[in-house]
Every structure is written in structure tokens, then in C-alpha cells.
Length: 436
Ligand code: UDX
Image 1 (cartoon, rainbow, N blue to C red):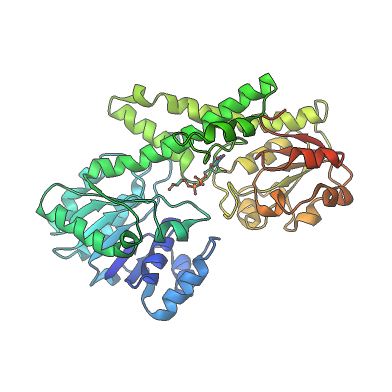
Image 2: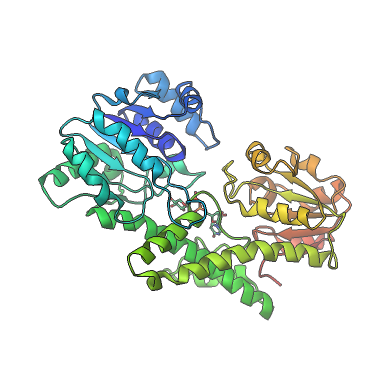
């Protein structure tokens, strides 16, 4: 099927490449000429495992093209809207400016029978407000939220846990939903459940899923605070409660908490929208989820300061990680970088290393010192602070190897991903987050 993807940021670029890889003819539209040039050359402007291969083969096949001109959507049966919805400055609500701009540019090119499929994360009620302009052009709006995780984006897009499509309960809505069934026929055949619903429910599914995931992380981080006071171990606690299939072990990783371009801003926008709907009290707990999460960053800093007897002034500290999570070069709202910045603010001599995210980190925080190679970041260090759980640190850094490279013997494990016994046996002071 011929389709367009409007907005080729993280979500749009992955979606366009994935759709082309299953045989669709895709044009990606973006207003940033540099992004269009990169993508058209078959390379992603950001790091995402397997995406470059997918882009290159899509472009080579002729099924995947990119353009800055909305007129090039001509002939597309479906137009996926994948522009960003960042947090508004000075407010916790979502900024829908890009959604409105993209739609205004798209509408003149719509033809009767076209389907516009919103993928961006938006406050519930947005689709209802956008319908009029699309229907006036004879097209139909559906909402098709995206649940992909950075680092697993290609796999999540090709084999989604579920597909959700919201549409109006009328003939046009049903027809448009069937068009989306056709787009995702391969995933459906591969076992992904397809949930057809109304527009508002589809928008809410995304907000609710993110709110639940964030709550799960903050729940275990709250348990980490209690475990620490009680001398218990939150990782064993998570293992034990995670065996209950009603709870599950995933997203019970206690540590410095969640960051990134989605969860933090999405839970704030979700709460702001609930407030507008007169239901702020229903999600009052999300304020607590946010507060617990932000407290974890401060707590990691405190652990390091205490390990040095109350002051880090002049101490050489190597931060393992800058990205908000492994397999990503994304540093948006990265807890790892925030801990680094705070330690530097307290007078520590901080060196940051990361296998993928250094260029992005340097662009946001040029005041920090960066070293690309892990082993070059260790010599002279008084302490290691692990803040992003790349395999290079969690699995491939033996305490004996670190001992040979640096004089310090303090390791603060901000992701609870190292083996405390192994580090202690090698003569290190190991400090986890909610572990004795
Ligand atoms: C998230 C959602 O998972 C995804 O469905 C949605 O579409 C977008 O937001 P993403 O931001 O890529 O995806 O990352 P995710 O894997 O959810 O991790 C988010 C943050 O939570 C990271 O900073 C991660 O380190 C942290 N996290 C995750 C924990 O602190 N503990 C955990 O157990 C899991």
C-alpha cells in the first residue's frame, strides 16, 4: 500500500522504515532538510539498533523515499501523523503545535477516502478536535498510538504487543479501521492482537500505559527507600514479588529512575489533561510517582557524597553512562546526566563515558568532561558511578580490570545491575540503590 509518514523524528523514521520493510511504498515527510537528506541517504540521524540496515534496504528497494514537500504525499492511501508533542515550557501540558502545523500542511493534499492515522502521543480529546478539518477534505481520522521502546524500536514496530486503532463509530470509521488492518496484516498474522475502539479510548490507552509503567518503576523505587531504611534488598524483593504473575518482574528495576523523551513528560501531560477534565484527583498519585522518581537522582548523589565522608570536592568520579537507558543515544531528561551535573556542581572532577550518547550529551551539557572509551575514563578515578546499564559496564567490566586501571575502590551502582559480592570480594566498597 502507498502511504505517507508525516514527521520523521524517532517515531516516524522507524515507522516509515518498518512499513517499507514489509512491502509498503512509503514517503516520509519532514520539514528539516538535514533530516530528510540523512534519511534519504539511508542513515538515521540518531542511534537505534538495526534501523540503519532497514533504512538502507528500504531506500535501495525504491519503496522508501523522503521529502520536505507535502505535495509528495500524493497517491498515499494512509497518512501517519508522527510529529513530536513535547512538554510546554512553564507548564506540564503537551505542546500540540507540531500536530496542528503538520495537519494544516497536509489537509490541502488530502483526497476523499484517504485515512489520516494519528500516532503522536496526545491528550485525550485531541482527535475529536482535529476531525473537522480532515472530514471537510473527505478523509477519515483514526488514532493509532505507538508503544515502541527506544533501543527495541524496530522489533516493537514489526512485532507489536498489540495494535490499537480508534475511529468514529460510523461507516467511514469502520472503513478506515479496515484500511489499518490491511496495513498491519503481517503483524496481525504474526499474532499481534488488534484492538478496534473509539478515538478517545485509543488516545487514553497510550497515556494509561505510560502512567502504569512509570508507576511501576516509582513503586519499586519507593520500596527501595524502605528497604534501605530496613536493611533489606530491593532487587531480591523485586524478584520475589515479580514471580507473582499478576505483578511480573519487568519494570521493577529500582535505581536512579526513569527519564527519556516520553515517560516523564507523558505522565505530566496526562495529569494536566485529567485536571482539565475535572478529574485531577483521579491521577493525583502521578504527582507522587514523579516526585519519587526525581528523588532517586538526588539520592544517588547523596550516596556518592556520603561514600567520601561528606564532600566530593576535588574527587575524580567516572560516570559510566550518559544515555537515559542502554541501546540508545538519547539524553533527553537523562537521570544519568543529571547525577553527573549535580556531582560536578558539588565540586567533583567528573568524567562521563558512554558508548553512543557522548555527542548528544556534549551538545546539552558542554561543561562536563567526556571520554568515549570506557577504559580511558577510568585511570585516576576515585570512584565509579554506574548510571546507564550498558552491557559494557554491567557484564563486561570485571572489578579486577577496574582495579588495575584506577586507584579508587568505590563503586556506586545506580542501576542495581552489578554483582555486589564480586565487587566486594575484589576489595571494593559497593553501594547499590536500596540494597544493604
Ligand atoms: C517508554 C515506553 O516503554 C514505551 O512503551 C513508550 O512508547 C515510550 O516510553 P522508552 O522511553 O523508550 O519507552 O523507555 P523505557 O524502556 O520504557 O524506559 C524508560 C525509563 O525507565 C528509562 O530511563 C529506564 O532506565 C527506566 N526504567 C525502566 C527503570 O528505571 N526501571 C525499570 O525497571 C525499567
